[in-house]
Length: 244
Image (tube, rainbow, N blue to C red):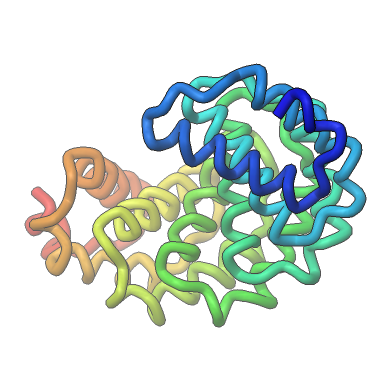
């Protein structure tokens, strides 16, 4: 990659970044020099990136950071800056991936672009009705994590995506249930009004998925229910019993 990096087209940059992140996620040692070389090319191709390519690179940078690799802050800034240009063309998966990536980068100590957060958050109202359970959970988790990091989150985005939980709750996997309840609790902790209907809809699914929950899911859900109760939200006693 170091030899050909300067000739890479936008799509190739995004595909290589995605591939390196996927390999790192699978536990492989990835070549840090390759990551640096391809990351450095993002500034050259950023202005030509399409929505999916922006999404892939942002997701890759966040996954690499999550794997403990140093990510190129200049690359993060360059690609983040393009979100305002492409946000209106983003598909639901791109919206959820980018918000998740921005939140994960912030959690990893990388400075994230508040304009990028606002631009992508604003698109949730457009794509909300098409979001799948995983995307709902990713966006809710991202908004909560961004709020936790001290960012002002888009209250309309929170309301819009929360409202979709009732539509997708029955298809949620244990991790989705855990993420959404954790997010609602964290948002409540930060003073954001949470949708009580969303709390009820997702809590009701705990009895269905409790037997498949991993330890982290159990702790997240119990934390969330306790935190919501502390904030004056009525919590589902059946959910507490099922997870306990």
